Image 1 (cartoon, helix red, strand yellow):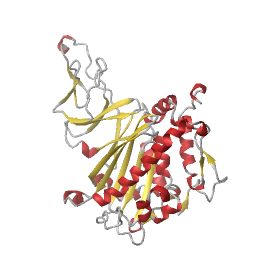
Image 2: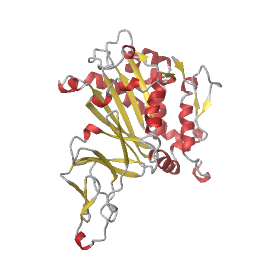
Image 3: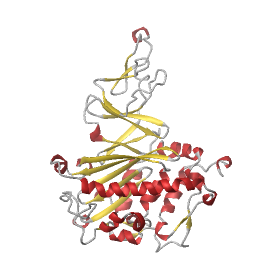
Image 4: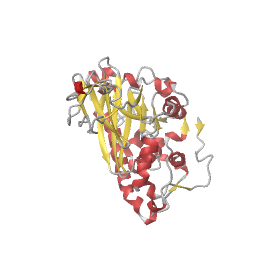
Length: 385
């Protein structure tokens, strides 16, 4: 087991400062985060299987932009800014849906094919000088990995291999460890959306530490007893928290789950691995399923979290009862998000003007704070309390 640089064995003093409170409340800070993080980095948008046929689409909010993701007639995924090139109306107003052959603006009926090319508009034949490609939808860079569609709004996206796959490899020790779960080949068993009235960074910080686990996660610590000691699995490269001896599976009551995912290694059995892929993905690996969180920060004090529970296709197809399996992390989510919502109001308090502190088992959160401040310009003087 390799100890991370920020572990208590290697870090002093005992208390480290957090970000000041206005980093969680100031609209100007959030705007810069939208620009320098969510609109500049690879963002996990949708599960590819949700778009199961040509013409299926989904819209997602990424920073200040609304992005439309669809499949073209050849079954290839495409992403565009969800903006008509005529007068700027939102092209698709629903979160998801299906079109037959084209995308039509509901305002003036400008129409685009599923590759984004302008194909029709009222009186278009009388405007022969219009370049239908140039006046097409604005494309967005797209990658598929782990069965999900990742998009990047930047003109020059960062390396996907370094920033996304690299984040998983850094946590697990290598990228092959996650590939063994065949996440892309799993089936969606359950999806739950949570509208959390808290800043996205509070949610990340909460996920990264387990100092709170003994206090608010009784069901989780029953299955993963080492979490009761306060050390999060993410402290250690390659480490997965071991199931309790009496736990038969990763379920709300420790009862038996489902058959082990075929490809995982023997040493991954009866282990839980937690991975943060900045800025907005949490990946949770257990022997019989995978839990994927995607955050969509909407305001300084509001974050939509979409959580997928993924299982072997035969488990979902057989309509086995998933409730005890889903319920464990659903409770963890509810407990965590309640804690974040109770914390958010304090970010405006004079008591938190200079921030709080991180105890040794939370020191790795300091690396997340440094990552944020390295990428996001500091608030202006008028934005500080």
